[in-house]
Image 1 (spheres, helix red, strand yellow):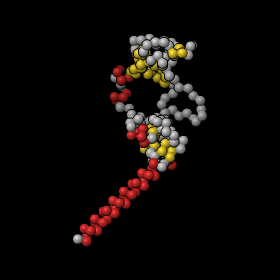
Image 2 (spheres, helix red, strand yellow):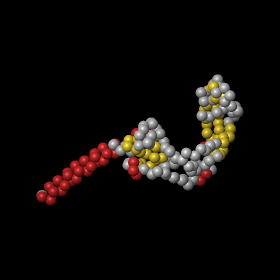
Image 3 (cartoon, rainbow, N blue to C red):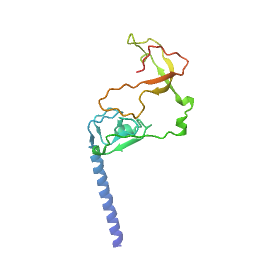
Image 4 (spheres, rainbow, N blue to C red):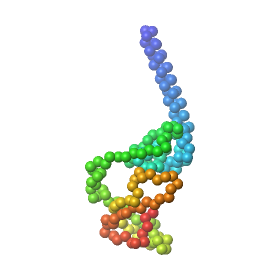
Length: 177
C-alpha cells in the first residue's frame, strides 16, 4: 500500500516537473533572437524562436511559421534553436542518383509562361505589348558552378546558357527578370 502511494506521488511530481520544464523551454525558445538574420519566406527580421537554415542553398533561412507552412520544403533544413549554435557556413553535397543523372526529356524542360509584364524591349525599356506568350527553355550550362566559393565583397558575374526547346522563337531583345 505504501509502495503504491509513493509510486503515484513520484509519478505525479515527475509529470509536474517535466511539464514546467517544457513550458520554460518553450518560453525561452520564443525569446531567442537571431540578430541580422531575415526569414526568406515572410521577411521577418530578425528571426525569433527556431531558425531553419537550408542545407543546400548558400543563404536561405526560415522562421518557424514558414517552415511549418512548407515553404522551401524541397530542401533539407537545419533546425537551430540557439543563435550561438548556428554554423557560420554549411556545405551539403548530394550524391546524384541514377535517375537524376539521366533525366527524362520531360523533366529536363523548364516551361516558362511569359506574360507581357515580363517581356521587355531592351532599347525601349518598356514592356512589349503582346498577349501571353508561352516559351520553353532548357538549361544548358552556367559560368560558375553551384557551391563555388567567392570571397566576401568580391565582384563576380554568373551567366546561364539556355536552349530554346519550344516552337516559338525568342525575340533577340527579351530579358528574363
